[in-house]
Length: 178
Image (tube, rainbow, N blue to C red; front, side):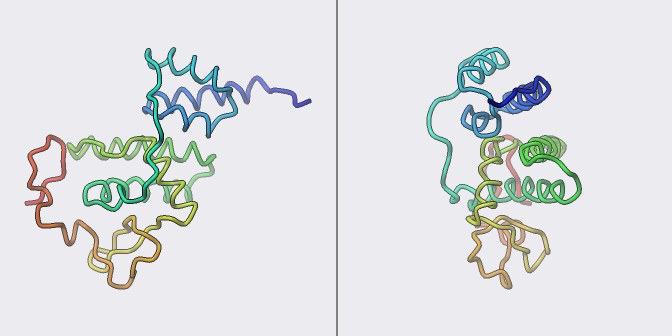
């Protein structure tokens, strides 16, 4: 029989609370903690004041390839990769900290965060499973989220070569091209 540590459980609860505050879906909490579904459900309702969203998590890598989501995903993933190299943290704690820093950056730039913490978590899973990677732009040398089979030598990012209608929308908090 495994002995449960009160400190380990407290850390799991704290981690779950942080994720709930960031808007994580219940499936993320289940995957990243050892707490039971019933406890997570009660905790979610207590922390957020409402029941968790229902439905499947986003699974397609395609969302990360469209223009603005790619820029946001690339910003998050670069922060995540830096933290992964610079600090010794559990993987989920790296995702939490990187997401908090991503939110700080979007707020400082007057942009709406397009990436939810659930999508950010999923992005890291896609990278870990070799479904997505970072590729260097041949013009600006920035690292951007791409499919692993992208021709890296001639890759040009969406900031250096935006699509024709990019930044023309009036959406509040979106990236504007001048």
